[in-house]
Image 1 (spheres, one colour):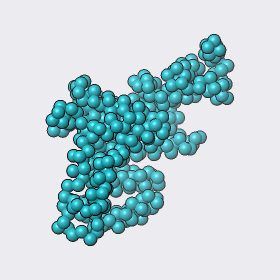
Image 2 (cartoon, helix red, strand yellow):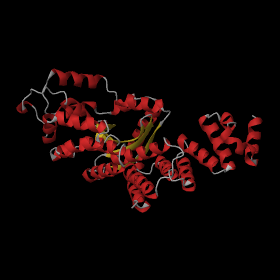
Image 3 (cartoon, one colour):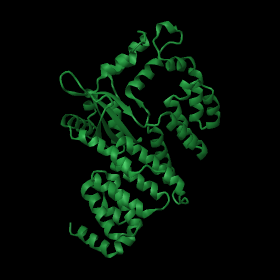
Image 4 (tube, helix red, strand yellow):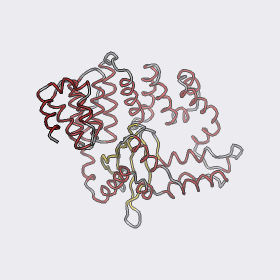
Amino acid sequence: MRLTRAVLLLGVLASVAHAADPPWTTFTRDIEEGFAAGESWRFTAALQRERLLALARSGLPETPEITGATTGLRERFEVGRHICADIAAAHGSARFVRIVEAADGAERVAVLRWLGASGLEYLSLRLVREPSGEVAIADVYFHRAGQSLAEALRRSLVQLLPAELGAATVELSEGERLARDRNRELAEVRRRYAAGDYAGAMVLHSGLPRLLRDDRALLLDRVRSGLAGDPADAAEAVAAYRKAYPADIAADLALVAHRLAARAATPGAPPVSDVRVAETLAAIDRVELVAGADPYLELLRGEAELTRDAVAPARAHASRAAEAEPALEPAHWAVLALALRADDHAEVGRALTVLGQRFAAPVDTIAGSPEFAAFARSAAGQAWLATRSRK
C-alpha cells in the first residue's frame, strides 16, 4: 500500500518552522550554491574535519598506516571535490530541500539533493553551532550509500590495522572485531554479490554472526545483487534491508534507480505491471518521507507511471516538477517529450521556448528533426516556427 499524501504532508509541515531559521538556511544555501558553482572549498571549509578524524581514530593505535592515512585525509579532503565533479560531469545540480530539527533539539539536519553522473543522492548535513557562533557541519549522511562520513572514515582506518595487532592494543566495537576477524569471509560474500552469484553469496551471508549479517553495507550489497537478478531475490533483499533499517532509504533509492534504468534500457518493451509500478511509487514515497518534498521525486513518479505507458499521469507529474523547480532542466525535457508523445503541439511549442530561453537548448535544430514533423505541420507548430524566423 502506498503511503498517503497526508502522512507525507505531515512530514513536510514538521520542517516548516525551522526552514525559515535564517542562520541555518543561509548556511545551507551557501553550500548549495558552492556545489552548483563547483566551489567545493565551501563544503570542505565548513566540515569539522578534526572532529571527524578524531571520531574515526578513537581507540586506534598510532601505527604508521593509521598516522599516514590520517595525515593524508587532513591535507586532501576530497569529498566536496568529488561531489562537484560528479555534478559537473552530468551538468547536474544541487538543491537544498529542507531543514529539520535534530533528535536532541540542539542542532539541525539540512537535506540536500545531489544530481550527477552517478545518479540521485541525498545528503543529510548535521549542522552545529561552533563556540564562535558560526554554523558548521559535524557529519554528513549519504543516503544512497547508507553511511555517514564519520562511519566511512572509521571503516577505512580500521581496515588499515595490521592483522598481527592483539585485541588488547585496539579499542574496537564488537561488530568491528567480528569484521576484522572474519574479513576473508566478508570479502568473499561481497565478491559473490558483485559477480551476480546471489545464491552463493546468501549461503555464506546467512552463516555469519547476526552483527555481520545485519551490517548495513553488506545488506546493501545484497540489495544491489538481488535487483540485478531474479525479482524474487530483489524483493527478499529489499525486505531484509527495510526490516533491519526501517528508517533508511538506501534500498529504496537503489530499487527506484534500477527499475527506471532497466525500463529506459529496453525501449519498446511491454508495459510494466501495475503491481511493479506500485512498488516503485511506494519506494519513492519512502524517500520523500526522509528527504522532504523534492520536485525531482515528482519527476521520478512520472517516469514510474510511464513504465506502464500511463502518459497522462506522467505528464501531470512532470509538469508539477517543472513548476515547483523551474531550474530543474530534466523536468522540462520530460514535459517536452511527453507533450510530443501526446500530440499536444501547443505544449510542445511552450516547452521548446522554455528550453531555449532558460537552458540555451538548440531548439531550432530539435524542432527540425523527424520526430517533430507532425508538430511542424500543426497550426501551433507553424506559429512557433514563425516566431523563430523573426529572430
